[in-house]
Image (cartoon, rainbow, N blue to C red; front, top):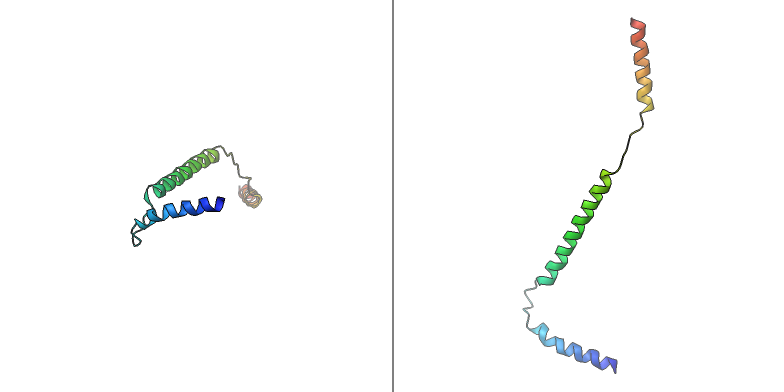
Length: 81
């Protein structure tokens, strides 16, 4: 019995599909609403990410090779005096 209802629903929708021009397909209002919702969601995610990245406190550890070079350069200039 439920199969009969599905068949009847499909036959009722077939005349609606025949009204459209088969050579012209547009997304319509529903496509715009979906696209706009995705755009707003991406914008909110980017705004949230920017806020969270602003909270990050990152201090880079000093480079041990640079300290060694500074120490040898400082010792060399002290010997020249």
